Length: 221
Image (tube, rainbow, N blue to C red; front, side):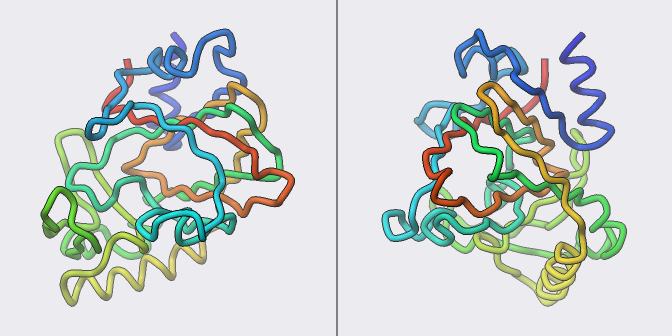
């Protein structure tokens, strides 16, 4: 029943917040209870994220560019040809002052125009597995509409792409984000990664020991 309600909620609003979800379970067990975790490459499907200063991180990461500052809104792995459908974030050690803001891309698509976004071509700033294919900001798939956005790792690849890129950036600034905080161990956020753009607020010195687990799903159980 939980997953059924979870799927309905995500279909309705684009995300679901599960406070102190299955705290008696390990991180892998709790996340795996929602769906089959996706392994990207040869690494483990669950990654532990902790705020890091930009000087210590490579430039092809968010931490390497923004450090403890606020991250821009994006969808995860938008520069991949097939970004994962769902993103899961689970609190290991939280702090109420750090939030995960969310914006619904459907509002952006309505304002900019889905047809314009479908015609707008982008590509990865860096090659992924040796290639940088042309991709659409918005596309219809058999699993639903997929909107991709990442102003750090995506660049326009057409004149329409340049125009759409600027319009999307302007619309993001106009939106009022939903602010959620993974403050308590077990707090779990499941996000439709094709629909919702997410960010991370700046991290104060008192919260640099924050730890969040991240994983991806293609479908819910």
